[in-house]
Image (cartoon, rainbow, N blue to C red; front, top):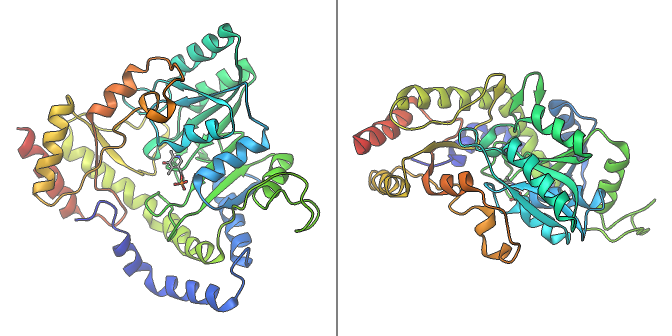
Length: 373
Ligand SMILES: *Cc1c(COP(=O)(O)O)cnc(C)c1O
């Protein structure tokens, strides 16, 4: 069994995929070919925002957003403590300071109450200026934007939505990557919408920020390619990857997103009363980047992972370490985030992808049930 079966996906999409890749190769337009602009239009339309700017990966996408806002030394950026390293790394890379905020046990996303506490503590400290909240749509579920937007408005902060895992998720009528003032996603192969290498995108309704990001991703270009008006980056999505993503986006819209939701429902119905399952609050829909259960403690989690492995069932610990305990952030004098710390000891992500069969899910669940009994 595969954790995320990208080979099976390729076998199913093969005809369209091979045609798209060969056509991109034959065209010779390897950089910023027509597929890139087409894809950006399709992504913007799907997400429901005015601008989509593709780039080299999800980490650069976050960096481009922070650059467009001029975030740097002296600025405080609030980041959930339970996330992939990138969400906070980009803040330090720009010279700003990440302030880690605890998450909610059941939804894994940033805790609005602790966020407000962290903002007040930062204001009271008087050393840093609160500027941005980076929300993460972890494991496919959009963060609690109703409450976070209220806090952002009250304290005059911008929201940067890290939708690397959230693409395809929704709350009410709105899709992930439309909640932030700027939102980003990643097309790393294992993400809900992945390419065959690295890729990413930035989304915004704001014309000025979109223009700045378009410049930053291309060496700070001005009116033409060799007019450089600011220090930027080389961060573009390859034409071949855009062609691959066009094929994948079609499958994602037509059936993959429904298929992962059906798989999640199956897991949930079989594991009910056995383990603590992911919770999707009323009105939300997840794109299930991960299906993550919670065990009693690290001992039980590690034993379960070992016994699944013995039966040939892959599982992953996302994430084993909270941000505030990462070596790279030593010396930041971070706030305590007990929930994030506890989750790191107890979470386990199960095989999850649109091509998982009923039998696969039953195999995984039976192994979990027999181990825990
Ligand atoms: C994967 C990921 C990123 C970074 O994306 P890359 O394309 O790998 O650079 C950022 N944030 C989160 C939450 C992620 O899961």
